Length: 256
Image 1: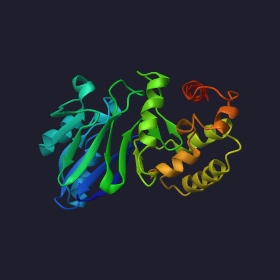
Image 2: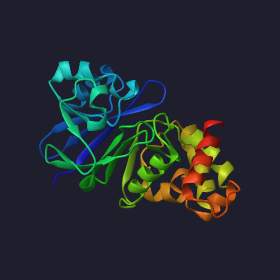
Image 3: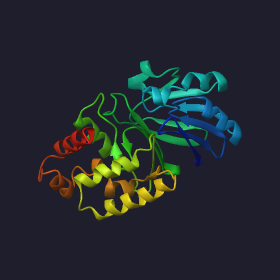
Image 4: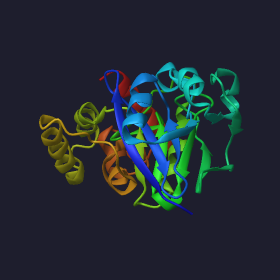
């Protein structure tokens, strides 16, 4: 299978949209277009022809540009079957266990509810690329707007099983604020402390912190570590069920 060339577009206050181009065929997907104009302008600048939109969930800052991009390019919109009624212009519905090929690049689809009831993720194994929407952020996870802690923890465990070199392309630049919170629940995590310092330096230079690898997240992201004894101890719940630890960490983050 061919690999993806991935281009990141910052929009709004903290959103990231991605252009992912199949290097063999030139087919190009837009992942979660919050808005249209910056995407169309960037694709024209790069000389890339948009053929697809891949939506992870229905929130306006992920689908807001769907129809304008589709009208301008005639692209195919691919989105979550459980959310088909909330994805503007959807042409193809995908769900857990499906594969979807864009050009010569094959993705595997995961159903990852929690942030929303119909959230999905697209993993392109040959490119080590995971388009995760708002399920996982660098050092964080999405708020539970429509799902339960148990659902989100199950979704996160699916993602933890991917290869450690997988790059996580999430949809927001929240990393610095997430790091400040993460330290409060796992203060003895040396890898986390070192990463937080690195993130502060990156942001001071105006650099982006997304993507990073699953390996790094597994070592430092508290929402991926709800079954780690050090995290359970950090929130005063040694020996507790990971779902309960996860729920407590999410509750604290919501009120941080």
